Length: 324
Image 1 (tube, rainbow, N blue to C red):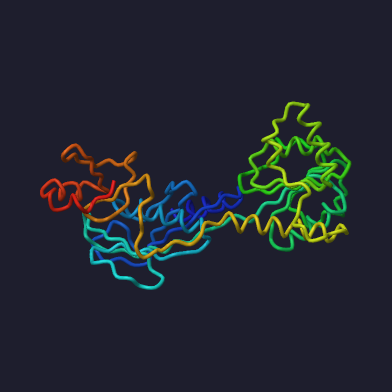
Image 2: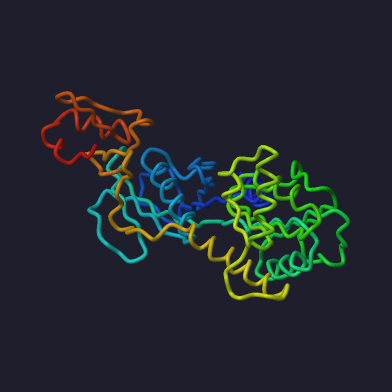
């Protein structure tokens, strides 16, 4: 199992995926998860591995997604005792089934930022070198590119600007720095990806001419509207070095803006599409809930069968505690 776990982690890192590792660090029996149990939680909340069942998995999956959004680890505690605010601990009640307690450490593993540079211009060369220096995984696609000018890049593709064999994810940033060598072809390829950021190294006048040409070729104006042109922050840059710095600064700023603001971790609130289990207070997605009851024409959702049974025995005691 340990070897399979390590192989899974290595596979995700190699593919540039974002994920979190959850490790059970303490438990008070009875619990199904034991200290040392581990799981990988993917960005979509999928759990691979074992950290316990019942209440543990959905809570840890939700907290793992928050950890990925914020880029910070957290310690999650599930306990049948009353929630008590403790610095650095995210508390959840666990009244279902066993009644034990668990501490689970959740650590995000963020993929190296991926920069895809199209072109072999002086700006492209300097940008690739600077991005690699701050630990970006840099891919360069440029016909006839000299490998000596791109010695720091992760991958150099000396071909036309066909990106079919180049991995582009929603986290990738693309900079088109062709500067007269295939501008239209490179930009057309860039805008047809799902990249988070697309920058075009060109003056406003030159960029508009390229946009007009691509519109005539059938590329929609809203698609071209994704492109930042001229690429980079307005720092008054003139030299290739200064332009490269301004572009990298804009990318860093852009990435920082994608990180969601921190939220209060001591009193977890359900998302708007979630309901609250009136027994244990856990957030439950009605679309995925396996346990529900109806009272006076209203549905109540539960994280497990134990909570549902407790509710069904005394619904009048818990109805006012539910949010829906």
